[in-house]
Image (cartoon, rainbow over all chains, first blue to last red; front, side, top):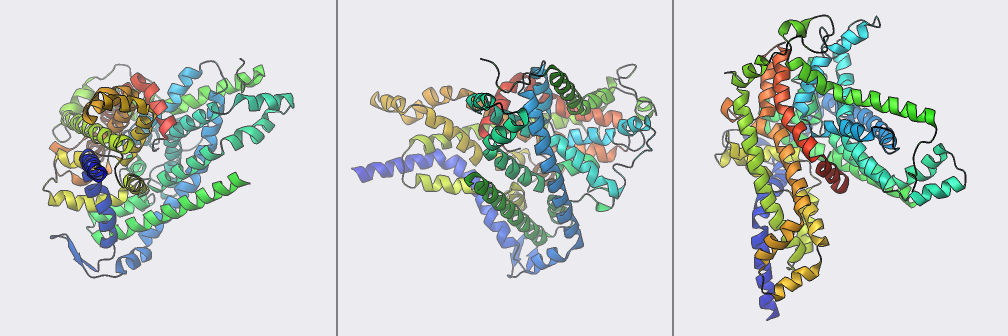
Length: 295
Length: 281
């Protein structure tokens, strides 16, 4: 009886899960293994889309490719700059938004808005703002006697401009998360601190920061992963990978190898490498924040 | 009770207010500049002076962009709407069924399967697309709207979110309905789904926005103009049009305006959704 029943439940559950499992199996689980397999093919036929052989040649090719080095370096720079800066700024803004300043309803709406918007469209707006000739930013700087800067056309400036855009786009999500975290801190902790006559800064160091610990770790992990996936921001801002490929990123590299160069195994190998790098960083960050939490 | 972390010093409050005001100007300025630019003439766009708002609003910039032959934003808009709506309906359907199975049906290997699915969330989606492109081509779906809809019509993350919500609905309701002879199917749609309405609205909104903004995948599986969606259409238009920034800004506004409207109407759901689920950045 019982066995009969559990079999029936199993079948029923599978029917419920079928639509989701089908999609996930075909478009998520299968590609994981297939992409991994593809990265080890020695030879790949573009027309039949089938490969043969087994070896590391794609990885060796990618790791020796100067363009990949550039993409890797840029992605690191982008992550190292945008992640800490956007976290510090968004924490600061979230604290101010949480302080019952007049008009905070309006401010919240303003600060959250960039979360819903399209990176290509807003990137285009930034392209317009940072245009070297008739961009409003250079005109504004001109009022202070600063000469026009080639924000988008000078390879030395392009990563800087990309980081500004990246920070601007990344703030909204982080402010929402920090604000929710701040509102979840037990007010009694602050009351106790005030009885001890602890100043604002001390309260921030002793209560706010430790209480936000897990959220901080979460923000770092998510932000780093997203920074490593940076791609649409580049397209929105430059239309391609910037002057002299100066703003190329890992995802851009992968897409370019796959779609423009039709080097499928190379693209797969760079995709796997990207996955590994993201994994390593996620683990390091989780480790570090767990250790801090234990102390 | 007094707000605990209120800034008490009146000078500090003024400084904080000014900082928030300047910050919100920085956050809103790109939107303002995009919209203001979309109404300018080519002369106003390229003028060396800063023109905050055009002398006369050039509505024809929009009609030009919507009916352009080389980049028909009207068609793009229609495609984006179809893809986003159909995709959201599919996703909600697969999510509701999946979350119910994981939340209420006690089948063998349930937790193992669930953990396996959760593990897939660690892999960046950029890694799938190489293989998915080959799969879609083999299915003869290249250059169709289906190619943009199908791969994203189920999401482990949304199943995970909705399952959490379903788990909060008391088990007594489920047991009582079983005693009354109510089938699982009926219980799901008559009790669970109406109860989870706010979660479903949030999931639907996020899915719609993600689909509307999707770029890399639609770009890969789209061959000709008639199947393009707004994000890729805008990108092609920007590469084609040189320095016609007034028209580009009109195109960008067409892409962004529906998102702003959705955000202003559903702000509460969206903010709660991010805060609760920590939705992907």
